[in-house]
Length: 184
Ligand SMILES: [Zn+2]
Image (tube, rainbow, N blue to C red; front, side, top):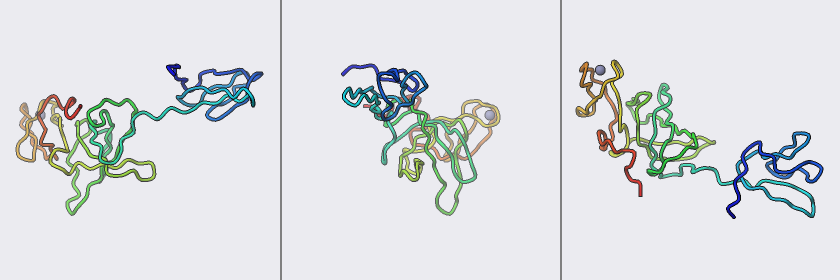
């Protein structure tokens, strides 16, 4: 059971012995894996295949994710997910938050660390929201000078240059152990 997982490109068999099965390709000499998984050999039919491993933790609806803002567009932004329900993830997946309501303002900046809740999976895109008190910006920096900012109502104020900018702050903003929050 503790077989080492195959990685994409790993050689699992030679073509004289096996035929390509699921999740494999043939490089002319060897059967290689296309995915992360475990190799399976059907010796009767001489087929080598890979049983794909469950993808690394994909955020599900209602999961709370933490990550950094990777892109900011007109009325939406993308979060590069670093934690799902407090557990680190390295899957490199992103979710999208859309501005809703009449104001349609985006109150985050690229690089901010935010907490968001997954609301849906639609056409392969993971949608999330930050519009709950505990959701929103957990950590930010001054857009002008990069210094530390402190919460000032629904704004952040730079402790260095005094620049003030609106943010959708989480009620956990300023809690430096945001990384550990709600891990269990
Ligand atoms: Zn500043």
